[in-house]
Length: 234
Image (cartoon, rainbow, N blue to C red; front, side):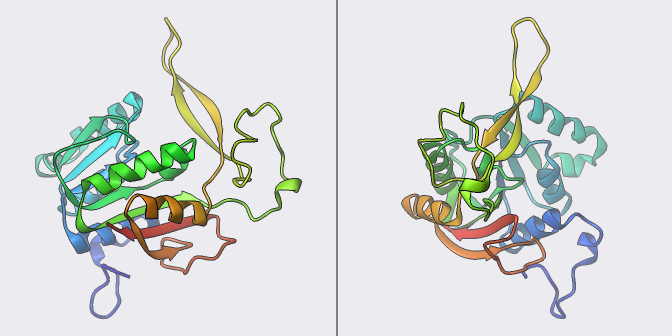
């Protein structure tokens, strides 16, 4: 894996970090910054990259998440804080003038897309912001291998009949703003995209899948893995 030294050891600066942070930091530091993080959420990936010397733009459509990410600014050095910007924006329609050698979609950001059109719009954003030959690195939940007939179905789900080839459900939380009330959350049912669906959407967006893993330690991907971790080239 990228980021190990000549003897295959993990750099001391990464020892003890969570596996996904180690993985994303290795991928990003190999290419260098700046790095675009789509779906930056609370900023844990963005701040980790900044701690390792990379300039980062984190983008999230949730005001609450951007606010939470900004709260970490006071706990880091001025040098690290100066490397990170957070932007409240929809990743599907983002169009910045800056280009990036690395674009990340960590923590199942792609899996939060509710339809194929949303997925393709997200990937169009990735392609727009990558330099030629740049890397797109992501992780998503992998659909269950259990037959669809044996899974619980929601007969009231209006999307169930529209995309029957996406059998597995993943639960996510999204903000809900009620008039005159504080921000809350609601539970959504989203169907994870299959590897084939992701590959087809990437091809349509001009991205070429290069590597696929089942764990952040570099284990080769198996269809039964709970997570699909990928590296594509723009």
